[in-house]
Length: 438
Image 1: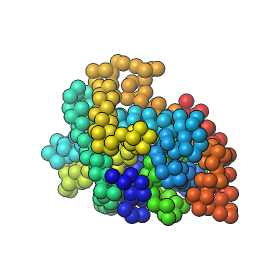
Image 2: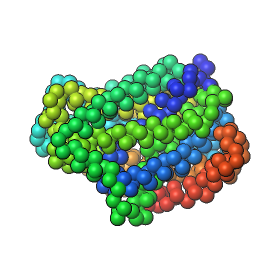
Image 3: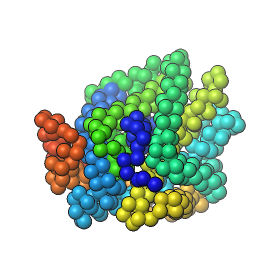
Image 4: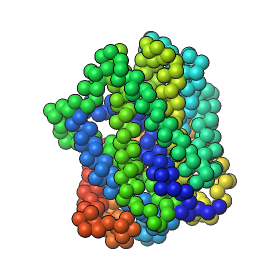
């Protein structure tokens, strides 16, 4: 199989890369964090950081991958030297840990899609939904079944290869994601009292602007684009040499940001219309939104659409995680693609078992005071991704600045702005996020 320059089209790359960036966090975290941190004021900062720092680092990752024709480990080694390969290896390890617990949550979306189809998730009682969710995630077997199904679904896509697997899936998953979100958003906005949710989400509260909020916006912009683990390095390594990196990167950032905005306009008007608690995370998606659907005409259809949306978003990210890990074994260790992917999927399933059981039979197990699931999340989000982002910025700005900026194809003020961002702005700002999160 040809493993380089394998994207069949520019659109295919953009949709796949945007799918990598869009995950469950865009739906269950971004709206809540935005509304609770000043609404439009926070959103403005998020957009600024996404289209400056985020865009610069995305271009750096894509250029690094294409220039080296390799994944994170090989690219860091080839462009920066042997010691830099450790940063790429950190990204691969982080990607594996992330995929292991993310697949567990992805399995929850599969399970709740099934519950929406059979109607069991529809309830007007938040406490009953909370009990249902707690009973499911604490079960020692059922979440492992859906965890396995989600891992197998991801494996099935990536086994198809770059063009016939990941790209083809991206061309289906991303348009489906937009269509489902638009349908749900329109229905949400037409509810009585929905405007209060729009105001809560978008109205700027400048009094909330403080250093902590600025760092929060910076961190969310960085993490929401899946930067720092090398996923875009892997995808960039399959990019045709004549493709313009700047415009492709702008499109990827734009689509990722647009999904997050649509999520807010989909969720907050509905939550406000029924006076519910817009809590972030599983509480919103598995315990709050079903109450909304219970009160809607054709609510079961909207519930099915919503959980299909969650499953789609989860899959669009997980395929990038699997490719990120596999490319190291394929490119650097010269192992055949199919056995590598199957082996990784099996290892991910096994390593996800403790994460799943941390909600039930292993809930008392603590790692530095955190549950197994939370410890895995903490390692990826608070340590590996910021360190990877700092390392990427330093490599792009100093070690291989001129080489990478030539690969991106920037000149004049754009060239200087990109170098300045990578050399000074990004390392300082991401270090600030790292310190705050620690």
